[in-house]
Image (cartoon, rainbow over all chains, first blue to last red):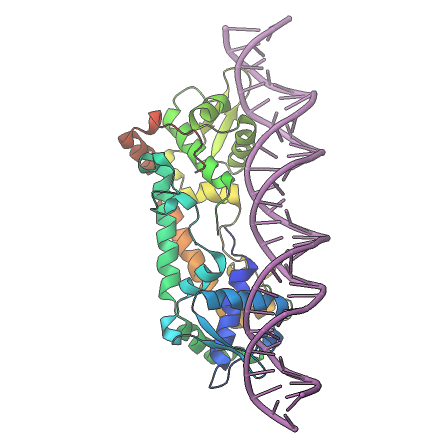
Length: 151
Length: 151
DNA sequence: GGTAAATCCTAGTAAATTACTAGGAGATAA
DNA sequence: TTATCTCCTAGTAATTTACTAGGATTTACC
């Protein structure tokens, strides 16, 4: 039940992007320098966020990334699902009649997995990027030394 | 953010044990037959549950396992934590001053991990084994064909 | 037009983790 | 004494993770 580095790094990167975004796009180089992340790896995470429609890219010199929508319209759930795939703790928790096992409507544990899933979803969907950026400004995280931080 | 087979199989096994427990202990052989699980693997899971104080074992012929406490005193959280280790989505979510990163009190993402952690904990700690056994009896899961079910 | 600064795209890969299997030692009821 | 159990430690194939590597392409600017 651990989040991978994709989710951890990716959310950090997106908060950073939101915080530093203005008219001009923010480059991977600058994000990875501030957040102490591998440029090459971050590149892949940004590709996932782009595919999910959370960021837009500007190619060429002076290019980079900008948020594709308003900060308030992006939830932590959107970000984590883009990077981690489904957040369901067990696959059968979903209601898809295809992937799920046949016994699932008689299955007691399914009830458990579904409740865990619901509580995670509710939580991540109610935290929005603008809240985090606000919080970050308050805490003056800009100068935060990220060296060695894995979260 | 997936639960491993330890948590999935182990919870199923423990519900089965609770359902079939009486004066006589329940053997791994019988649980694994009903639940379609590997005996050898289940052995290891039961050892973890025993170490966590959730079940007691009776050695020798006619032996097996019994719950170490009342069903109502065992939560899904107890079971999953025994089998999966901490359920925290990210290590720094904990308050341990040792393992956590130094920057953690200025760290915005920590707030996110902590909220996810809290919601998972609240959910799994409020579901108790007796509720699941009750539910299982209602649904008559005894005859449920578990062949190939991975959850 | 050339160059530097970017994103884009695909592969490869070492390390860790998962999900088991295997082999036997020890305990106990019949 | 034997069959049926738990207990304990190792081993291991497959998968996943967390990157790194090598370019191709696009674009601003001189």
